[in-house]
Amino acid sequence: MNRMPHWLRLLPAAAIVLATSSVSAEVKTLSEEVIPYKGDALPARTEPLLEIGSDLLGTGPLDPGFELPTGAVWQPALWVFGQYRTGVGIFKNGDAPEVQEWANRLDLFANLQLSGTERVLFGLSPLRDGGRFSGYHRRPEDREGFDNQFSGEITALFFEGEIGELFPDADPFDTGGLDIGFTVGRQQLLFQEGLLINDTVDAVAVTRDTLIARDISVDTRLTALFGWGNIHRSDNARDDKAKLVGLFSETDFRASTVALDALWVTEGEDGDNGTDGLFLGAAATQRFGKLNTAFRVAQSVALDDTSEAVDTGTVFLAELSGDPMGNDDVMYVNAAWAVDRFTSAARDPIAGGPLGPVGILFASPGLGDYGTALSNRADDVVAAAAGYQMFFNQERTQLVAELGTRIATDPDQRDAAAIGLRFQQALGSRFVLQLDGFVSREEARDLGYGARTELLVRF
Image (cartoon, rainbow, N blue to C red; front, side, top):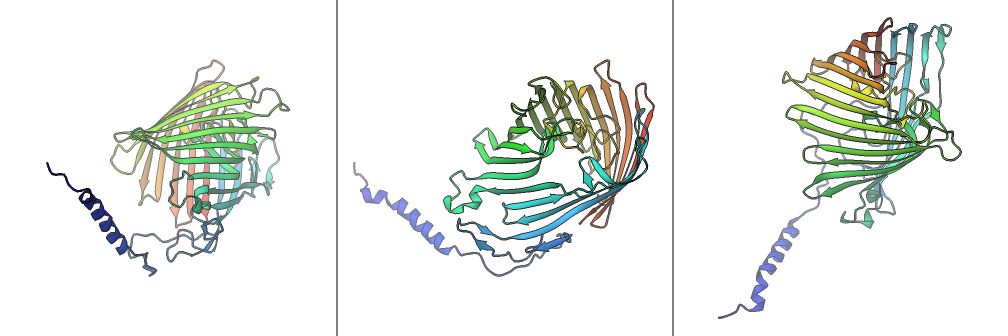
């Protein structure tokens, strides 16, 4: 039997090499010619208050920037933007006295964009001090008049980036696993839709993204975080001694996105008794046919004595929404069950309680003394809301109608129910008019009511 010469066996490999070389030789560099966008579907750009460098969401030639010694290319641009909210409202809930007010809030931001992944963000909210807002108020416990709550407190100041982009020469082929993001400074933390934590904290965090388990998950993100300042506990009060350690994960499976989170808050050996706590959260978000669903569970554990800042309890939250009419309208049903007294790891003074995600009747408006139609505290209660959101005028107009209830599971608590409406209208490209109103009734208490008008300006 004749055998093929060894050199003939190399012919297929040689042919592949030659073909690859031929194709590679035809590859050209990207053209330097500027080709403008030719479509007509691109909406007009709304410019921010100030732009230095490249336009925010602009089109046109890219700024060549400059190269750092690490190999990274930075294209600095400064964008100053913000929003102003002003609202007039009247609020009375239960046996509490009626409150009338005109409240104002101004949020200003300066974003120094260095590259697609690196930036510095600076923020101020000069018209509020914690949970108090500048404006004109009529409160039963205070004299009527103007409140000046001007504050120079910094609400955001952080740098974020990615190691692989800062040091591209260390991994030129992007195979070394340097896709590690990080952030340091004062920043908003929002996990488990605000159940677990909803606060602005001085913190440093490191994130490892794009972790893939073949045939199991599409992508996994892991974040480790340490917070050392500006921490507000579940009673919305600032705790200057508190420190926060957290580990957060989010995994995309083919049919669901699963999040598992853990937090530990402590004051250390010099802190007061009853303030250390452990906080755990889990969530699954997915679609069943045309139905959007999210299921969450959060647990708080008081490691010492219980207090207003930390207690032991569990809260379950289920959210379902869909478009039964086959258009842009949305029908939703949300429900929560709080076993014992659940407390969050940290909550901003204007965030209210952890049951805000249940519905607009539970959510804090974040402006003035106008409260919630139904309490958003998670203590021995079943809370539910059902609503319908309608869109009109090419989605520039929307109307939400919602019915909500709180059913106490503790004999010391009271049942309550409310109905509310929200109307929003976009005016031009920078203004939004919003009208809110509700009527509520809590067991063994007077009728509650509220109405407010708000104008939001983005610039």
